[in-house]
Image 1 (tube, one colour):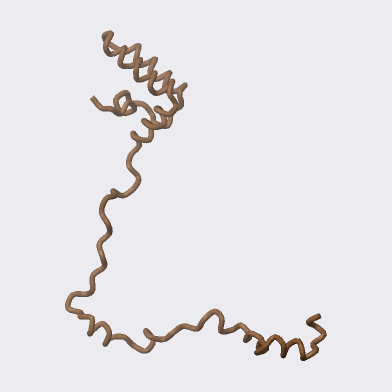
Image 2 (tube, rainbow, N blue to C red; image 1 turned 180 degrees about the horizontal axis):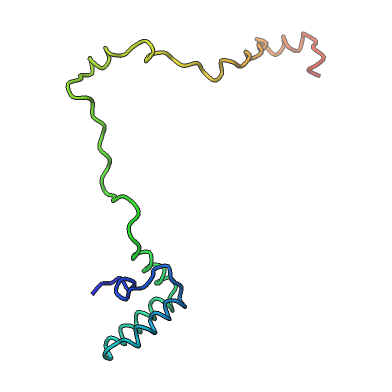
Length: 128
């Protein structure tokens, strides 16, 4: 038997405790034998009395939405027959041009005095 209670009993993983209880009542009415009734009661208890178990079971029963993990992506390959020397030889000047810097349009920084004493002796009133 499956460990997935949602799949085993045909339950909706997005259902709340009230909806699950209704479905389990229907299943109990259709149950044949004491063992089946006991299994349904145990499943009901696991999914309705323990919210953490219900949420964990619901998440496990939903289909996988991510790509399988465990393997690193492949490294890109160079075109067959193209050596490093050929690749370098095929570069053009445009491939080697350094694009302008963001700082190029900014005005130049103001010149600083060589010594602090020169600045103080200049008598600039804006500094006081």
